Length: 479
Image 1 (cartoon, rainbow, N blue to C red):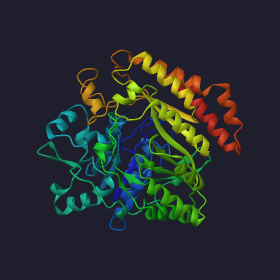
Image 2: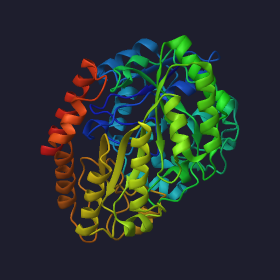
Image 3: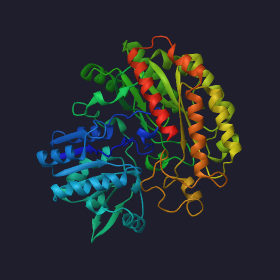
Image 4: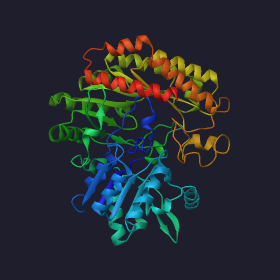
């Protein structure tokens, strides 16, 4: 028996996406997404292993609930998905699990451990009290790793499995990731029969929302992003036919018609997008979906076909209104391109969820003012503004460690609530105040409130979600 879990740590984290591990509870408009990593693992293990799957954080359950299930299920293995922000609390939970079942084998997944040399991993372990209660660390794509790992645990061959670390003579010994699976169509669909699909809601429709992974890997070079490291630079695409089959499965077998298309950039491959849209349109499948994009990968034709196929919103990383910052962060776009992309989306009738960053090491108050100006000019339907965290393995980490941050800056930190150092010119206190002021000014504009409340087809349940998120925004930006 194996338990696959998101542990109950009091706050909601985006645990299934290693490149984006935000504290959802402290964010403005983000929602938790489906536990696809757990679902994929369950699908690869069945029917050889008995599987128990539960998202304790999503169900708002307690540690006592988890420990009760451990006693009742008596698992041989427990797989736990952790994040940088929740790692200390997760390790405390693992201690408690071991106290009620000392012989359970704990598999702990987290990009925090990705491809560290043995010395660096063991040095990190010294700062993570309780990490030794884990038996395996998983830092590769867990969907492809857990099934062969369990086989190797019983039959030998652990040294041949990339993306894991195990203990030898009391020390962690990592097997680095050197390649990624090219045949991403080979994965079965996530086991949605075991996932509590009702937990993951599209606030716009108040209906269950499934996450569909459409590709893996990122060919771009943004200095703050983990994706090219943890998923590779190659865009490993699923075929449109395979994606469409999963959509049909969700509609026919799980009554889900709302989707988040998860990829590092959904619109990178125009042909893949247009072919998937063609399959949806010609099938008559009536669905609603959201996807991610860059401003330099969309055009009028693509957006028109996406809208016809059910796309209601694009999540776009505008990041900054400063051309200097956009260049230095290697985003390779301009502030003008940001504005043009926003216009294209609005013309196509597609809503925008705009993402913006601040706190890059060179930023001055003038850079922040340029970003603030862009935020109001793009006038997205929803926005999120983050104070950047320098993830290990990124260029940003190399630029700031030893200068602005110490080596263990990530441990237990997230971008919405924990003290950071700030930039060379702006303190973290000033950044935090600036971020909160922008969010309040943006969402409390009479014009924004009027536009939101008078939009066509607004449902009472959606209005309630808007009120809930508005209250959360106020709470998180006033405190």
